[in-house]
Image (cartoon, rainbow, N blue to C red):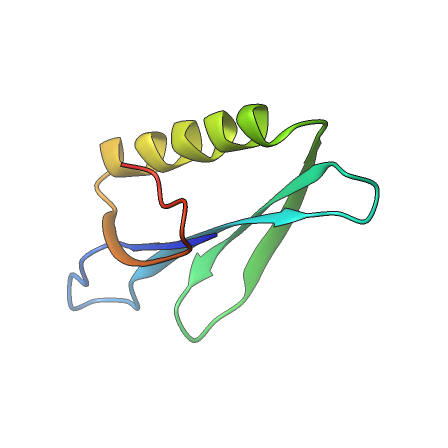
Length: 84
């Protein structure tokens, strides 16, 4: 699953983005990958490990809601189990 969130451009600098990806790992766990930065610039990548899909999904939804409160807009959703 993949979510892309972006801030509206204000004309002075490139808009910021946050990409959240949920991926299964080889040992049966799940990884939440968070990438953030300015479009066209440097970005930061962080990974969190979870034992089951439910806790990983809860963390993804929490991260998404946190970014929506900060003024980001949901631009793209990919995946069959897209959160509501």
